Amino acid sequence: MRIALIAHDQKKDKLANFVKDNESAFQKFELVATGTTGEQIMRNTSLAIHRFHSGPLGGDQEIGALIPKGELNAIFFLRDPLTAQPHEPDVNALLRLCDVYDIPVATNITSAIAVLAYLKIDNR
Image (cartoon, rainbow, N blue to C red):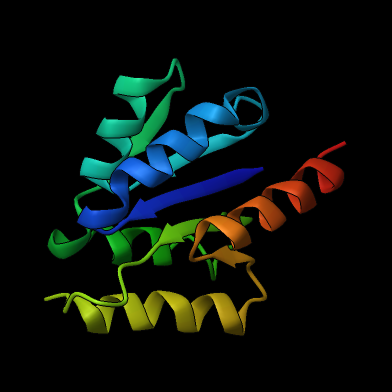
């Protein structure tokens, strides 16, 4: 099962802490991430993560390309809704693909807890 980890700048610490707090669960998955988010999570955990480019440099699109091929099972994407993002069209395209292909996506910590609980059940 492959999981993507993405976070806007103001949410990177929150996602890194969430993953660290749930490291034993995340060890069971193949992890991919946008560049800076993946780097920060790897610094704070012992997890191996395949890193794509940073989001504004195409990382969101690289992760999105996995979805139609059936190569991604869920996304943890902590978004900052209060800050304009220069790559907002890429973010919208990624979320659209999640909707089209029924990929669970967590955009805040509460939904991340729910998606992780679902993945734990689905990954038995």
